Image 1 (cartoon, rainbow, N blue to C red):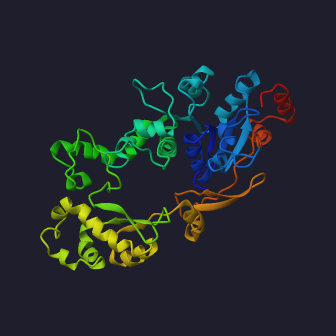
Image 2 (cartoon, one colour):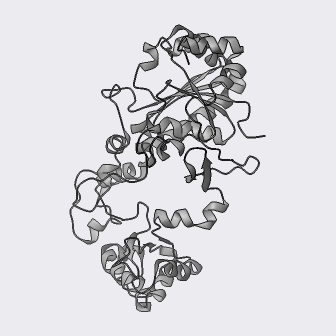
Length: 415
């Protein structure tokens, strides 16, 4: 059995945050019924297409292992079908604009009346407060959640990150809430609301910056480059380039070939426990006993000098050689891997982290697999559904319609 086998998810989500959540639930074995508008479907089916008239990679990579039903919830028959789906499903997930389902006549109170065991999970942009009715997209969430203000070069403009911490990050947070609510239902028998705001999720992922905001009240943040460069700290946690977010100083350094390869870099951490190994590797054994370098406190004002010396060494090695030399010595390093390199990495294929999927219209493409591994419930990645591909199947098996009723629903434009 799969971990969530027998659980039905009514997937009212679109674009990225909600589909990320429901795709993980589908990978765990839940039966995810994706409800889409007839003739239109999820907006991402047509966004950023690389092949004309074929579902985009944006859609396919967020909707694996799901079944698609088209449904016009504005029609009377469509509302009737929607009620039956609520009755039969365990969880409903949505990321509509605030109040959208209420305006359709399906408030939380109404959903509880239909199915008291229903878990109703929502992604919102902001929690209760002055911005709760505002629309939020990925980069807005990164900015409002504190990420952008602390990302970028020292003295430079705020920057967003390429990691989708607003959309996908919130979707993964919502998964945790849904699983907790499902477990609680085994004791209480009742469903409940589960909400996750994108601002809240981004802030949660930036907690070390909130930590540093409070530390500022007690003096300069000595592990930041500002300290060694005599750049004054302001009132808020600053942008700090590629400084480490933890207590172990780290930087991105050039490796052999950096002049023509934009990814010929490594991240190098001068962990205190292996400082002597670092000194030996880079040819500075005298620093092991030098009072200006021997202790972590003494090194903090000299981090730029230290990393410049390390970079002289890394520039003579490619990024993989740096890893091969440093890892046996427990020196933490990591190559900057491009997406071309990640796509070709065999170990990621073997673990199912990167998978090749065959689509009837698109052909073969690469996607991410489930990043969460369960020993007794491996995740199989199945292709995304075509628009409305499972409408008849879901109406028959879940809603309980006969063939005549399915035909009538189609004739009325309900599906």
